[in-house]
Length: 304
Image 1 (tube, rainbow, N blue to C red):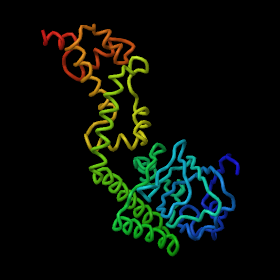
Image 2: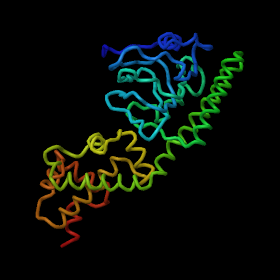
Image 3: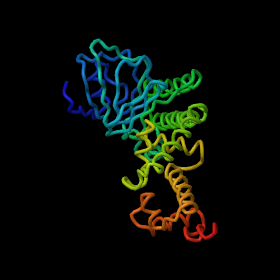
């Protein structure tokens, strides 16, 4: 199967592609995966959708890549995707469709409503998110109820009130999803404790090995790659657990190492700045003072 992505511009086009009846509404549709015609070929297929997609998937047989990274369904079932993004599906021969459902919303449906802009604030549509949202049984029922309300509205009552009613229901669905997404961070306490330990150890090792001298300051992308999570997910997780951004965590560890070198070595401020990955010592001194309210030299003098 060709790796060239297939662009799906309309919801009607997707219905036709997967052997589904013509959609009841051209700009919004909810379908069950069991109703879709199975793919005829195995291998990799890349798709670009020109609409939003929200789905709940169980019994996953396929492997997915979202953007350039694998998408993890191991502990989650809910997946959201924004328009114009690449989703690659890798199928084995005789793979069956997953169970669950998918909602498609064309951006034109949101036009001239507050949600047209507000939908961009929901982080789970971000390209860099690569972990599915875990839903408890009660949470999945709640999401399913709202989805059924939307489906019932566009199937039976298309009138001047329909769009506002569906938009209101859709916003409720997204707000619940945001609540569950944030809850996912808070309920994995053991895993989160291990995550913070790994992050701290990773930064310690980076500075201890003097990697910063060769590679510069550790980047957010480097840390997320080492911890096998997306930068966006890591940022949200750290914000929830520590109240700090990833960059603030990096700077915190950096200042800790700088204080250690200033107080226990004879290295000059310029030499310390270089060892910590700064090209210019002025940048190091500026950051140090911003974080500690004291210059590196004055900090060193306080130990004499």
